[in-house]
Length: 155
Image (cartoon, rainbow, N blue to C red; front, side):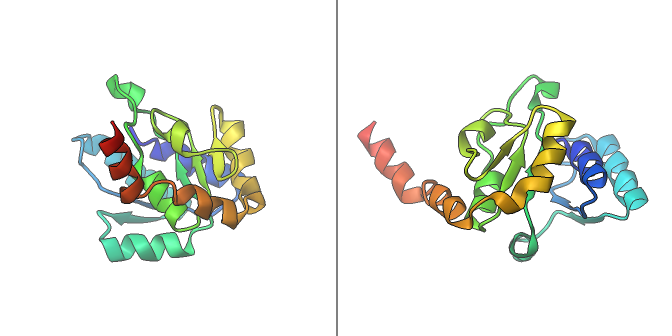
């Protein structure tokens, strides 16, 4: 449902390195996890399974961008919010996403790319250096606990 296979394919096609990080087996499809392990190994990509907070911080600090090609429609749902996208923005990293569910509300053209096709993903990967870091930080600051609490209280 996170579309990791898409990230692997488009990264290879764009000639970019990829580190795959995430929680494995959370939704019970270990066959998919094995497929991802196999693909990662065949392409020479590193996998960080079930990363700790420190590992997440380290990975984000060195990332050029974060790719989130989520496709929850395969389980009849949508990505509800996309905390990983916000974490990437808070780290000053552009986000490349499918725009599934809440992701399309988080990622604006100023801070990343919402993709529909493989070509969109490849073009986005090749264009991340055109994103202004100041715009990323400004967008990230919108997603604060304080703002959320204030808006809840208004409701």
